[in-house]
Image (cartoon, rainbow, N blue to C red):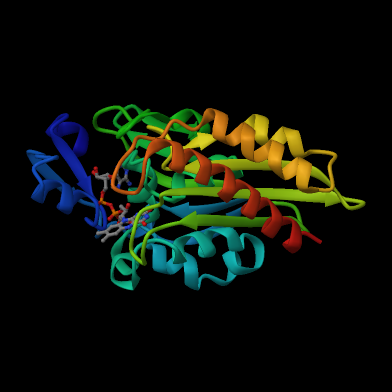
Amino acid sequence: MLADLGEDARPLAGGHSLIPMMKLRLAAPADLVDLGGIGELKGIRTEGGDIVIGAMTTQHALIADATLAARLPLLGETALLIADPQVRYVGTIGGNVAQGDPGNDMPAVMLCLGASYQIAGKGGERRVAARDFYEGAYLTALAPGEMVTAIRIPVPPQGHGAAYEKLKRKIGDYATAAAAVILTQSQGRVATCSIGLTNVAETPLWAEAAAKSVIGTALDAAALKKAAALAEAIAAPASDNRGPAEYRRKMAGVMVARALMRAQSRAA
Ligand SMILES: Cc1cc2nc3c(=O)[nH]c(=O)nc-3n(C[C@H](O)[C@H](O)[C@H](O)COP(=O)(O)OP(=O)(O)OC[C@H]3O[C@@H](n4cnc5c(N)ncnc54)[C@H](O)[C@@H]3O)c2cc1C
């Protein structure tokens, strides 16, 4: 239907980003295609070495799911920092990652975890790495008529530690700056690390240099300072009602240092 209706049609998931945008006249789709009745788009399962989450799985379901709690608790932790229960009961992970809003929390987590998105359209199915998906504010690799059907996340190794640190002005707010970290340790030193940043540029950012800089360190004060500085170097936030650009850039570094410390404390 989406493909047949043309590029002015939009899928409607939880509607908690799309409807506010329509109210503000920032979006005016000619047609809405409600995904709510498609049962195959819901649910969380493991497939091979991956956790596969249907696009219409709600943020609330991520918090409540036992598989995620045991194998990938970072997702529930992040979902709990999104908005409030009312939004989380209807807002979906597919809508959150597909919208391309740099303020949404899940995209940076997906970059951090090396996730990929399953995409379906008239031409068939394809898979795009989250790290290649975001092209600009509200601009993604989705072509007209395509939709995200599922999110595929490689199961992190046993003993990993992860954390999402989000600075916000109040409950229900988008991030002033936020950072996702996953790491593993060996003999008290960081063996692998990946870092994602939320709302400090037009797209979510994968902070590759910052993550590489902590490998082989015990995450002492100097290592944390260096990682924070490397994250700040790639951040390019706008000044807005959450603060001036310089402050938000600095907070990106602070969130990275905090997330690294908390992830380390959780790693076996
Ligand atoms: C008060 C409030 C506070 C919020 N705070 C936060 C916050 O702190 N952090 C955060 O991350 N989010 C926040 N949100 C947004 C909320 O999480 C949204 O629900 C979510 O981002 C979008 O999911 P949705 O299912 O509601 O999508 P919709 O609003 O239905 O859709 C969003 C966009 O994605 C498209 N879309 C939806 N599903 C698909 C799909 N499967 N494939 C392709 N395109 C699709 C739609 O066409 C639309 O353009 C907040 C929302 C509100 C109302």
